[in-house]
Length: 179
Image 1 (cartoon, one colour):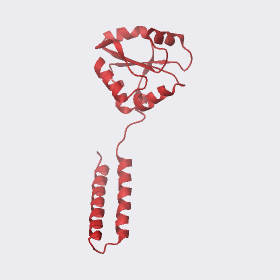
Image 2: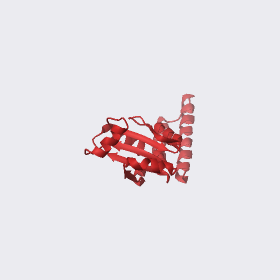
Image 3: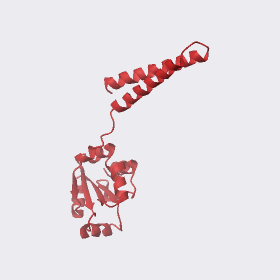
């Protein structure tokens, strides 16, 4: 945590405590002007805003470092035998659930950190335009539509199929299970 955040949090706590103490004094009959208490609360709000904007947040651009390869189903078994984890994502630009999966799960920093590991191979099948090879792969998996995500690994050479609507927990558990 940076020094700015620490100082801001300490001063925020002091401002809030001072506001509460002066409010208590006012309630017990002391002649404390209301404007002073209001001003302290405004300073507290400004200080809280500084804490919020300065505090380090998730890197929403982290997904850009992921290296997706085209989906080549014949390579999966070989990659898994070599000790790799293979993450399959079959998606399309027109698929709203696929976009939600990317925005709320696959492109989140916590998942990107796991997918960016050297032993994880990312393969993406893009059905934005018709693609008979990817459609045949989906049919071979017993799937008729997208999104389709599956994770293969040394502990699960046949793969683990993920639900259509992903959660961070789904992906984390599947990655932990197959490795």
